Image 1 (tube, rainbow, N blue to C red):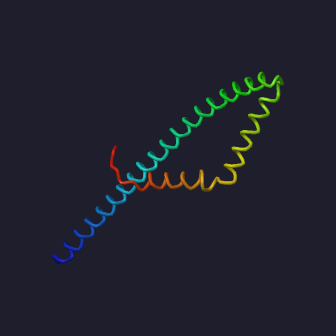
Image 2 (image 1 turned 135 degrees about the vertical axis):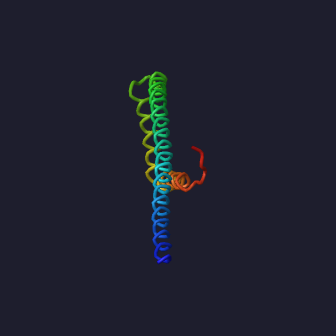
Image 3 (image 1 turned 60 degrees about the vertical axis):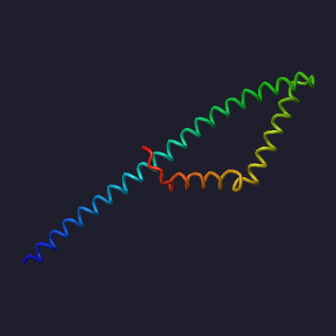
Length: 117
């Protein structure tokens, strides 16, 4: 009968071990998700600030070019053409310019082993 007690003790120990491993994995996944989420949120806030800066700058340059050219719409047409060109470049190269670097950054963040809490 001592073998049964040893097997039962081993079974209880194994259950505890598996539950602790499950909790560790769950906590690690939560930590990684919060790191990635906070990074994405901070990038979103930075993106909004840069958008507002670019918008204000574009308005200023549009008015300046309009005054320089003597036509109200010419300056804003030039600015619109510039943004159309940037959009086409990003559309054509979006996988290489945006998607791949962003995906790699997220994967590196998830797989990083730094335990800074």
